[in-house]
Image (cartoon, rainbow over all chains, first blue to last red; front, side, top):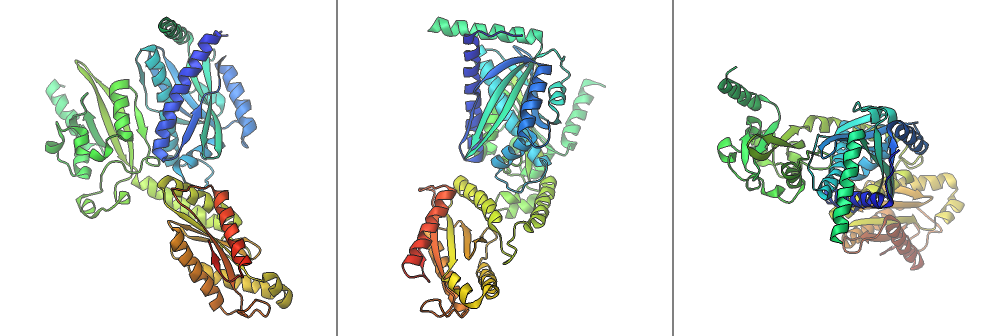
Length: 212
Length: 319
């Protein structure tokens, strides 16, 4: 699998924390209440493995087995990737209701709530990728967000990527008021995208070290 | 098709679509403005074209629409602004008659907005703002929510008195506390307890006791006039009243009116103190924006005030 040096790993975690920090600030402004977000850890795994992991992890937290809500966007440029924000379905209900401030609990997200979920995904994914593009001094273009519900296998495979694609998986820790919600952001990368990403990380580290 | 004809066709299509389409150039000047926008914004193409976008919509400067335009023009990222999280950002109305009498956001069209980057050969990047009217969907979901509330009210009401139960109180408190925190409005809580209720039960029996609870609950809950106000049975002979947008002075006044109303019911109580009738003690607590406290803190404060009212002789209001 992909080996990242400790330095590369730390650099990525730092970059993503800057990204979700900006996303949290945008979301706080949106709801007029403090939203906190952090990325405690990242890992590289293959897509099949990621789906299995998400399925078992998320399912153990949810009542219904393996139903996941995902918001995906495709990005291309310095490297190509499908970025997907994922929560277990019940957690996505909680998240949207907290953000929207609505308390009537329906079984599933309504159309308007799905749209709100898309906006939340859009803010988080644009911030993560935007920070990456920024530190890499590269440009990336993005698509509009899409909403999905299904199993982890379905959601990770929705873009038609190869099953042996690599997934860069971020754990996202979302907190509003007393509520804490754990989710994931997956960046699905094919072999060449992965190569491009590693190269960019190393450029960045070299620049950072050079300046130090 | 000839180039010119194609352009004319595209122009007609742009004006025929049933959503708002606005294109901004790299300096955020309006370069395209379709008929839908003219109709719902009341701004003609002559006024819009060439104008700086934020000169047309000054209230949007610095907000989420501004950020989304920046993301599209300078970072190449599209943004989605949902109706639920962005309450009607654009001043768009069903028609000029509605616009003329509009007073707040509810009168505007409910909007879903997408801002996407648009590449144009030989020019710096432009961006497209699309606005859809989602008023119908919003109305439908509001109805769905209301009907769900009606269905749920059975599990949300107290079996004996018919007013809201403890579970309903918890949900409403959570919602109103969040609203108060976000809007910086005061939130008051009254804790109301029937005085010497154990003595009443012992003397008159449990059936009469139940009757007393029903009568007091009905009379006091009928005093609430605003839809967000809620009276719940908190436990035994204790009731709680949630009063949003109510400061301490107003809450005290309300509490005093309630205390007087309970006494006025004139339910005989041989062991009920000097009055000879059933009375209530009330503790008042308020969450102010400049002294923010949590839900537990607010309930605790109202509880302590109630205890104070009991200690100082009952049939009184304390804060």
